[in-house]
Amino acid sequence: MMSRKGVLAVISGFSGAGKGTIVKELIKRYPEYALSVSMTTRDPRVGEEHGREYFFVSDEEFEELIKNDGLMEHAGYCKHYYGTPRKFVEDKLAQGQDVILEIEMQGALQVKEKYPQALLLFVTPPSAEELEKRLRGRGTETEEVIRQRLARSYEETQYIDKYDFLLINDDLDTCVELTHGIIEAAHDNVCRNAEFVNSIKTQLEVYK
Ligand code: 5GP
Image (cartoon, rainbow, N blue to C red; front, top):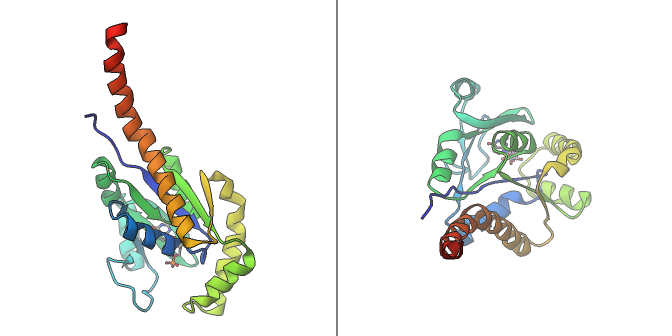
């Protein structure tokens, strides 16, 4: 069997679009996906745990990691740093596992530049009104932060066309299955199809 690499699937979306919920549900239904745990300099929210939602670090620790090329990508988002530790992702991909990154847009575009084969998916709610409602409904952010995040969403609309797929999240179940289907198709494209081509080539060799 030929060696195969996993698919690097990057999921972004407006803050409040529900991408966190989609990703959580995806991992629950399909535990074979490897989920990258990011690093951030923001404070943990109630219920968040170091090493589970994020690795919560200081500015100094984060900057040290950038210097040592320990991050695959990083970005500033609403006054804090966020970044993807490189080693975990590269190890899992090399083992043939599909890896999910749930990251914001600047980071996603950095990933696409460095790994053009990465699959970029963007999640949006069906309307701006719904976005604002979901953001407020979380009850975790101050009014100022909500405004910053909505303004950021507006800026992000300019770059959505750089993504490979758009997911309109009006139904969680549909969105989760669609996401899984897209990643599976990409996986087949890079892995199983290559194996199949090799195999049928060998079978057809007798006719050449
Ligand atoms: P939150 O503070 O709500 O957890 O995350 C804020 C934003 O940062 C979200 O859009 C989230 O997807 C993004 N984010 C989380 N981890 C990373 C990361 O490692 N890199 C980048 N570029 N963005 C991230």
